Length: 328
Image 1 (tube, helix red, strand yellow):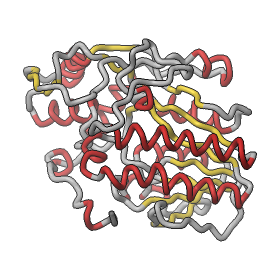
Image 2 (cartoon, helix red, strand yellow):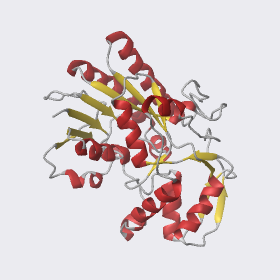
Image 3 (cartoon, helix red, strand yellow):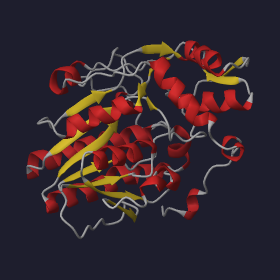
Image 4 (cartoon, one colour):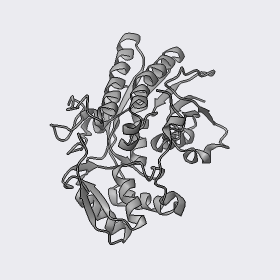
């Protein structure tokens, strides 16, 4: 059996990737330190004989005693609430953490897939965004800690590929949603869902004309899986090109949840992208991949997940005390 290490295994995407690789017959080693991940996301795997979990911070040296065939690096804060609270750790995960895992991949002669993000495009001046676009990023703005961590991550990955001949894959992930998202992580879908289920007004930042393109988690995982087993070493966009304005999306949420909230408006955060839509031409031609789950179907599944949360989880407003978990 092939063996894969998945970092960020207790996170939203990481936990779904653990499920997928286990279903494909792999031995899976999950790694997380629960800064932003949640133990309940992998609780269903604790009796799985082919799953092993290691609680570890990848900014520290990473050692695995067994052979490894593949590594998927998904350890990183991914929501603005998190990376604005722990900016230095976010940069360390993208730099030191990635360096540690690339070194591990080199030592184990393993193929490594790096989770990058559409945020490398910043507030784009090109629409839709293709892999050929170099981006428009404010390196010293508050969001720069995440954007630049991911841009550096891509650079060092390609350096290992060119200098050491390491087998590398880079996925640029666009907005993804589905079960196991953290309700209060500040991203659009869990924020709207939480507000709707609590009977609160839905909050839009800016005038609502900014756009996003939402990809259901099963489609995202399928794209990542195909990319890992492709022969392509450069970045590939994986996302859903079906674009919608935030204002229209808020109205969709109100209709889906059957609630009657108002929509209220607040100031747009600095450097928040006004447009986000992937050009997936490369994924179509290279991987024969495109999303299958339409937004209406995916949102029903996601709403049912959030609706099933306990009142305690639904009304939880406090966030983790990050100081207990990290060293600056």
